[in-house]
Amino acid sequence: MFLPNTCYLLTEWRHFLESLDGSNLFMNWRASGNADDLLLLVRNVLFFLAYSLFGMVTFVLSIRPVERVMRRRGMRVILWAIPFFFLMSLGVYLGLVLRFNSWDLLYAVGDIWGAAIAALNRPKLFLIIVGFAAFLWLSYFMLDIWVDGFQMRWQTWKRRGLNNKEHS
Image (cartoon, rainbow, N blue to C red; front, side, top):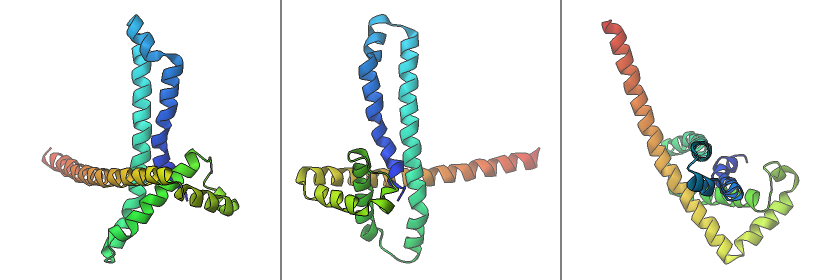
């Protein structure tokens, strides 16, 4: 119910672009060469990068345990991944464009169901939702590999730290 909120954070770049356009920060910096404008621009870019990354990392870390259990039970990931990522993408659309919230699943089920069916009956919108679902799946796949690599590196650092303490 709340999981689409994690990948929804990717859509927050629209606010960055709106503020960039509204403040002319980039153009002002280019025209003036003012280091304060550049610092503000870089700070905003780093904030939105971190914001998006945290959202996607929490997305991945929420799915990984469920995927691991399913794999141990011999279930094929592809069988649940296609509808799962599609539903996540649809959830982001329903929240971003139609402004539904997670709790609306409890109080406005009929409205959400009707909006979802209507979205699926619009071919261009359906393709956008499918495209974002594919993006989420690819992002999950790549970040899942990154998390595995980070865990391996963390274990290496811990072993090195313990070995260094033993020798001192």
